[in-house]
Length: 98
Image 1 (cartoon, rainbow, N blue to C red):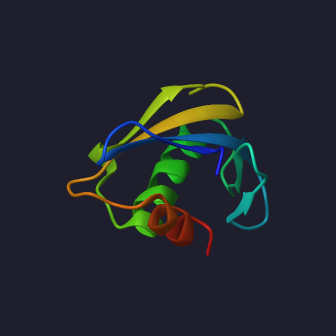
Image 2: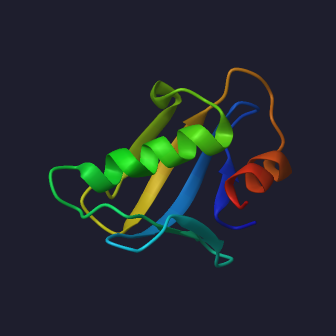
């Protein structure tokens, strides 16, 4: 998967395209990136908070293990994930795309 890049056994970077102000939350695999549809509007950082909460719940990690490394004010984002133990790429993909 091109949207998921492994940096070490416990660190990954995900390429995202975020769509805000949608009717429902969902995650779609577009090959080079994941498209994530969020309910929140991009006002007062609400969409970024909803994005972090969505990733946190799906991957069962804490919010301090998720970092927006670029694109905090754009639709295209790079997210860094920190895991406490070794995890396989396929496991991350399976949990994100439900």
